[in-house]
Image (cartoon, rainbow, N blue to C red; front, side, top):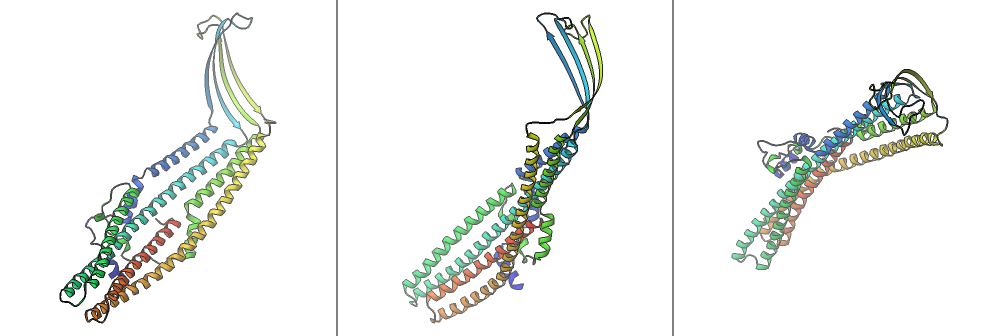
Length: 416
């Protein structure tokens, strides 16, 4: 653990005084990203659908005004006449259609809420992985810079040795080739840091400067994982699973909505009708008022097979969603198992990488001493430098893999 901390500190710059941590960047992303606002609109629309579905329990009021102009009068109707009409109707029974439509709409509202929750988790893991990518690029830059510094010192020492005739020019050129190659690697690493910062800024939704990042989240190795516990949490709380379950339940309610067409419909209607023999009602000399209360009972006997087909289609939709749910459950279970396998391997590899750095540093120290005594060739010294650089790059890679798997597991169990 001590070695881990020493190596990590050597790869990170000084912690800025006013730094953004991972949680703060995630909150910024959730407040700035337009896609979150879009999903919030979807949720509000589904809430309006619930209000629309509940309107079936309330009465409906209608007004109408009709003007008639005939080519000639009849015994029962003047050439010009008008009718004012008002009615209040209330559905008393329609095969429980309203009940199941409300329940379906409420389930779809829950579905949109879970979709929003899943999106927020996705954004947070994207921020975490992008932040990790910046750390990885910066750590690789540090390794490249250290490698360049080491080769530069060796090259300067080789120039001094050339001046006193201890080595020939061909040996110096071999050091120069490796030094130039290291310089190119440093420049490529700097560009990688800039590009990773640009990507992080895009995901957060605002510009981020490197001096705002502290990387304190990577000061310690990620905690160990328990597969069985995480599996149980995922199956119980994963938003995508819960959302699909809500969608399947809403589809079952839609089956009952379609089944309501086989039941009778009962409506209570109260209406007022006023007939006048003028196009302006109440201005003529003949008027007729009518108040009427009606209880209407209707039952559709046949609709060309549409009722049976609609019900069968709703059943198939429910069945299809159940298949989708099982497929998603199986896929997520497999993915979580594989993430735990990768996490365990990467945690083991951290210890191996740390040991490799120690050995490579000691190898470089001994090789430099032997080279200075003329007991090692320049190729041996360059190999020792390359081995140390490779060991440091490997450490950065395995640490990145460990934290990447850590963040992905947290996403699987909705832990952000």
